[in-house]
Picture 1 (cartoon, chains in turn yellow, red):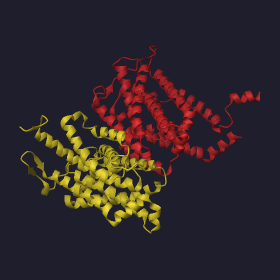
Picture 2 (cartoon, rainbow over the protein chains, first blue to last red):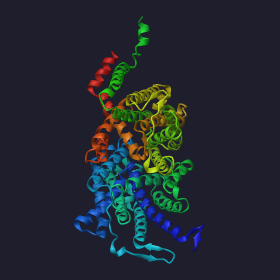
Picture 3 (tube, one colour):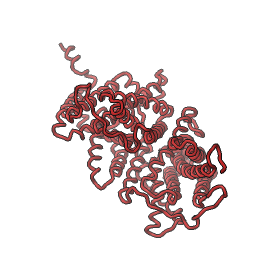
Picture 4 (tube, one colour):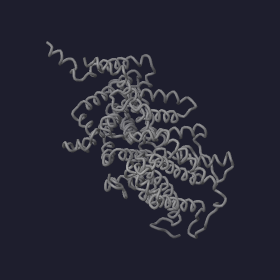
Length: 295
Length: 329
C-alpha cells in the first residue's frame, strides 16, 4: 500500500478531505463574521445560532411544506437573513453608540435564547437530513472515494466566498459599504442611507451563516447545539486572519481547516486545539492577524 | 477631640463609605445567620459564584477588560484543588492554595496574550484560549474527561476542623468569601486600583503619564484570575466534584451575566447578580424551559435597557442620590 510519512495514503487524503470540508464551513462563517465586524464593529456571537437556524429552516421547510433541498438552499439563507435584519433594526441598532462590548453581549444573549428555544421544541438530539438525490453517491478516484455531496460543498463554498469578495471589492454597492466603514458620517452627507446599509450588512452576514447551515444539514445532523461549539473555532479563525479582513477570513478558513485535518492524521490528540495554538502563535508574532491592519 | 473623632470615622470626602460600611455589616450579619434559615449548600453555592463574579468584575469594572474566558480560571482551579486534595492528600487550605496558584499561572499566560490587543479583540482571544483549555481538560488524564473528579474529600481545615460538617463548611466558605472581598476592596481603593481606572478611562493618557499600561493590565488579569480560582477551588470543596461544566464557555458567559445584572464596576453588585442568577438557575432547572432560553432573554433585556445593573440603578435612583446627598452633609 502507498504511504506518506508512514501513513496510508487513503487515511491521509481522507482526513485532508474532511479538513477541506471543515475549512469550507470555517471560511463561509468567518467571512460572514468579518463582513459584519468590518461594518458594524460588532462581534456577532449569534453567528453559530444563525448557522443552526439555517439548517433548521431547511429541515422544517422539508418536514412541514415538503420543500426540497434546492429551493431551501435559497429560502433558508433568505429567512435567516431577513429575521436577522429585523433584529438589527429593532435592537442591535440601538447599541451602536455604546461600547462595542455591548453588541457582543447582546448577540451572546441572542445566541443563548435562540438555542434554548430550539432545544425546547426539538430536544438536544439531531435530526437527519437526506442528501439530495442529484448529489447522492460519489466518484471513485482510484486512490480514494469522493462523495458527490462533499465535493459540492467545497465547490459551493468557494463560489460563494469568491462572489462575496467580488461583491465587496468590485461593485458599486461594495464601494458604498467600504466607504461607510471608513467614514460613515461623510458617506451620509452624500445622501447614502447608511443605517440601511448596516441593516443590509448584518442580514447578509447572517444569511451567509444560514447558507453554511443549509449546506451542513446533510453532512452533520440538524441539532440545536451544532453551532455553539463551531462558533468559537471560527472566532479563532477570524483572529488569525485579521479581524474585518475579508480575504484574510476566507484564506485562513481553508488553511486552518486543512491544518486541522493534517493534525488528525499525525497527532490526533491535538486536533481540537491546533487552531487555538496557531492563534496564540500569530498573536505573539503578528498581533494584527495575518492579513489584518494595525488598529 | 474633633480631629480624633474624624480619624475614627470615615473621611468626609468619601460620602458613601459610612453608608456602605453600615450596609456591609448588615450583609455580614445576614450571612452569619443565613445557614440557620436556608439550605447551607445553596448559600455556599451563591457565595462561590458571588466571589467569582466579583473577581471577574475587578477586571471588567475597574480595568475595563472584558474577559470571556474566566471559566478557565474558575473551572481550572476546581480541577487543581480537587486533584491536590484527592490524589495528593493535601489539607483543604493547601488545596485551595494550589488552585489559586494554578489559576494565577493560567491567568498570566492567557492575560499575556489577551492584552496584546485591546477591547473586543482581547475578549475574543480570552474566549478562544479558554476554549483551548477546555479541550485540554477534556483530554487530560487527571481531569478524568467527561466523568470529572468525583468524591473529593473536604478534609480537616488546618488538620483540626472537620469540614464534612455542613455548618463548619459554611463558615469556612463565608470566611474565604469575605477574605476575597476584602482583597478586592483593598485593590480597588489602592493606588494600583486608581491607575487601573485611569487606564480604563483613557489608556493613551495613562501611557503618556508614564505608567506601564500593559504591566498594570497584566497585574489586574492575574489578580482577577487568582481570585476566580479561589472561588472555583472553593466550589470544588463544597460540591465535592469538579467537572467540565465549570470550564465551558457557557460558564464564562454566566459570570458576565451576573456582573452585568448586579452592576458593572460596583463592589457588591456582582454579589446580588450572582445570587439572582443562581436562584433562577435552580428554579428553572426543574422546569420545562431550558435555562439558556431564560438567561439569554435576561441578557438581551439587560443590555438594551438595564445596563447599569441592580446596584448601579440604585445609585442612580432618586433614593440613592438623596442618601448620597445626606451622607455628604
